[in-house]
Image (cartoon, rainbow, N blue to C red):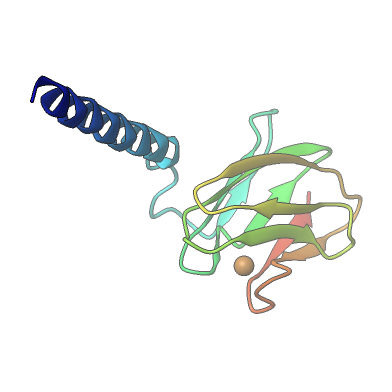
Length: 127
Ligand SMILES: [Cu+2]
């Protein structure tokens, strides 16, 4: 009888640890950045630019860079997306809940898109 009780206790702790691990794993996607600002974000001063993917769309869908710019892309969808420049210089897969940072270094304006969902497009302007 004692062995059976220990078995249940150990099993319970095991399940509990799984729940804790699952919850802490979700924290990576936390933090609301951006918000209801304009559709254009300018990366200057070395601060970089942030793009959020949500609802199968890039937000903002137009960014402005001057020189090499770090662009941080966060995927808040449950589907995998890519952040791909039309000129092919960047092609990064962004898993659900993941954040990737890439350096965008373009000399002329170019578009970007998701390889998986062709309707997801955006534009990079060079100032
Ligand atoms: Cu996509």
